[in-house]
Image (tube, rainbow, N blue to C red; front, side):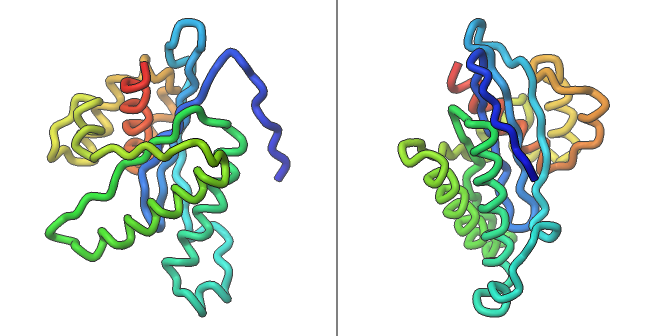
Length: 188
């Protein structure tokens, strides 16, 4: 696939990430350098199952390692294309109901950090607790996925997100938009 880099110097990009070892949400908020307002945003979910997962990696290192490796390679492409000023991800959360999920989240965060390092050795990955992300969009700490989508929808004009495309976003893309918005609020 041919990717033409964005050489627009009137804007900067913030990338928000909702980490997951199978589904990884990515949001890009484009900010005007003149008035510091969001000029556009987009979001999508990377599905590790649909990416090329190398079979020898599966056999030697396991399925999760192979999926995370594929997601890291895709993030490399995303960062190279969008040239983000800030990259922010939701931090891992240790939940008593699913304690085993914490290790997988740590692994994907390490992989995201590697991708950030590959993009720019001087750039750091910003991590934000899930509670801060929810608070930034006006949601409660125990909000359901539908409540989160509703709260982010209330920001659709601020985010400059296309209403018809928004309705088709999954929970990972919604969470990534929330992370990106949190980062935007912290930056400006």
